[in-house]
Amino acid sequence: MRLLILTMIADQPRHGYEIIKAIEDRFDGIYSPSPGVIYPALSWLEDMGYALLQPDGSGRKRARITDEGLAFLTANRAAADDLMTRRMPHGPRGNAPRPIVQAMDDIKAALRQRLAEAPSDPALVAALADRLQAAARDIATTPVTPTSPDIPDERHPMDQIITRHRHELKRRTLTVRETSYLTPHMIRIVLESDDLSDFVSLGADDHIKLFFGPEGDQMRDYTPRAYDTDDRSLVLDFAVHDAGPATAWAVQAKPGDTLRIGGPRGSAVVAPVFDWYLLIGDETALPAIGRRIEDLAAGTQVLSLVAVPGEEDEQTFQTAATWHASWIHRPIEAAADPAPLLTAAQALDLPEGRGFVWIAAEARVAKALKHHFLNDRGHPGPELKAAGYWVAGTAGESDKSLE
Figure 1 (spheres, rainbow, N blue to C red):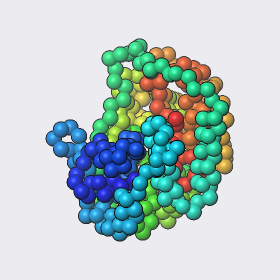
Figure 2: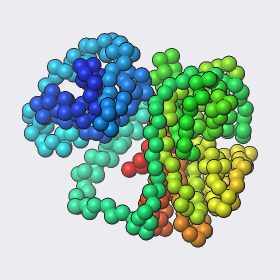
Figure 3: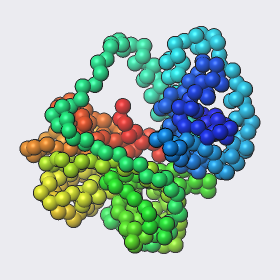
Figure 4: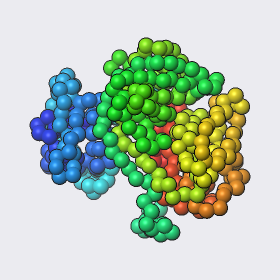
């Protein structure tokens, strides 16, 4: 899909729906990629520097190919030409309803993208195969019932709970100023560069991309723990919980080393309309939890429930808010087990008033916690945000939607 998009925008700059229409026309209407395929692919191309998205005056952004993108397309010309000359099937698959064909192609595109990131990772292959088999069983055995449109929560109809802000996407090369261990399983690295003078991050759980490997093709998402545009500095905290490229780099980093970053692409800011906040997560969520606690104003109650390996991994934060901390100790090997955090969450007594619940942990853990608050406690969906910061058994995968 990435090569197909590059081919389309090499011909002329296009916005997302123009790309969809061009692909649909190219394949005689048999295949039309969904926005859910096109826009993540465009984001990846922009992150890699192969495409540039610029406003065109109509409120939309057109994608144009960059010199790097043209070089990448040229290097992969044979594969791109094969895509452009390939004919879509007209057998049983070609006669299937268009939404089914589109969904099948979306799955194939997603699989190609994931396998390209780690083609020789047996754990990733096994995890993807399990998901596909589970989906097949679900399709074969689950009755399909009509769904009703979502009914908005009308308790606070005038509130826009989360506002989203787009930022200019920019790549920067930063230099390590200093490193330290906050706890046995958390490394803090302070980076610097004059290029941080216009860095902006408005949300406590924003993320930037870190690029590793000779080609920068190994990417990981990390939360800006703190930044200072006057000091031209950025603070990142690394949870030491796996042997991935980010952890390996952080363990060995020393002053003078460099790190390439991109973003943040945008910020999601929670409106200050709540009486209390509940922040739940594991060690990977501590940078966002710490930043949020420190950002909250006086007169606000904030509760945190965090799972870490041991007492020595607990952290303290300076805040004007009234902060109640609960720590769960469990071994790193049990980080993907929902039970420790879920049991503690079930026992929580929540304050009176309106509250916002924020959850980030391993995907299965986060999903169980989300289910508890939405279904068992009846917490309003718009007043909860949950994400899987990592997925057990896979390398570099997250599940931000938990669908």
